[in-house]
Length: 483
Picture 1: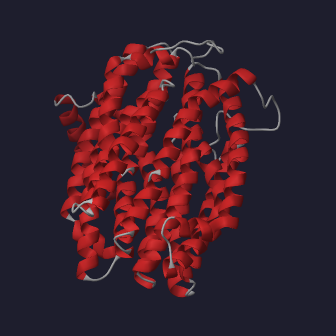
Picture 2 (picture 1 turned 135 degrees about the vertical axis):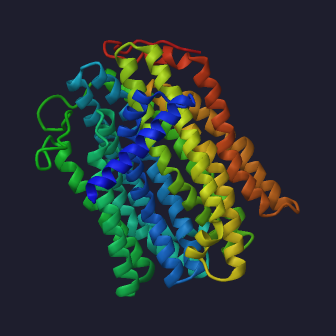
């Protein structure tokens, strides 16, 4: 029976690969490489994004809309800190993949060491600020009453786990940079399952409410960090999964030129991500002016889009790794072909996935909130989020290709334009005119659509290839501007 299922799945996969190849979406050989890297990262993305989503659903069932709104406020601060780690990890994977592709394993390992040092310096003050100022921070964006209590509790409990999350992001991207996305997938998926078990037990079983949801999340994140630390030090998991660029006490820990490269590549990524996180706060404040039910609906929409974004985790990291490795080997034409194919594949996947979510918007909304009015309001945000997920997915693959080349400044500018020249003004127009909540729908779409268009233009220009020459093995600290 199992053998028949495997054979059937293999035939379906072969038929799909052939159809995509004939349609000109992606070359069959590149599809194998792309999916080999992407599917574990997709699973990893779902595992990571499910933590907050599960917390939100369980709390919505056990406590109510006000607690969901409060957790939405707390998630905004958590996400802001996490975006810093994602930006740093993005710079890490860019340099690790190029040096590993250029057969400079020692240099790739040194990148990881310095990334961990920078991560420690960044996360320590963030954790302290969140723990000590949680109540003031939640109140600042419109939290009051039950929402203020829920948001404060969740932020205080989960903030210390950010130290582990920073490490987890760097470890996951390091593995991806050397072509191993399965090891972090297993660790992250295990952490997601642990989170579900702990959250359900602590909230529904032990009756600990928001505190239990935060505790389950914090413990599961720490557990993932301990598991990944084993492999990152060069030790295997039953014969597999040892990092080929291990972190150990021996060898150098600092290289000024490499540190400058890491900061130069990571800084625009961090700035872009932080700006994406900051814009959420005025959006939440605007949503709170329409009531806590609107805050909850907006947060559910953002959680649904984050889950859809898991596909982009896979395609983006595949693009970064494959493009970066080809560039590291000096194969610019092949790097371009890989980037184009991954971008086209992500577009097909996102159109199909977003359509499915739109058709199921009301049942999805019903998982998080009760009552016809709340379900209708939340379903509308789910639809807007699903529409915006299509440009999000395409942009993820484009940005991944640019990131593999070390070209991180242009995506940063593109993101700023989308967020602050289009999304935020759209939401403000809704606040000041009869458009109302419709402004928030428009903001969700604009913040992803505009950067996708601008980054697509950058990719077609091929200027990112010239940028990559600055970061290839042997390039040293040489400067080369692509314009």
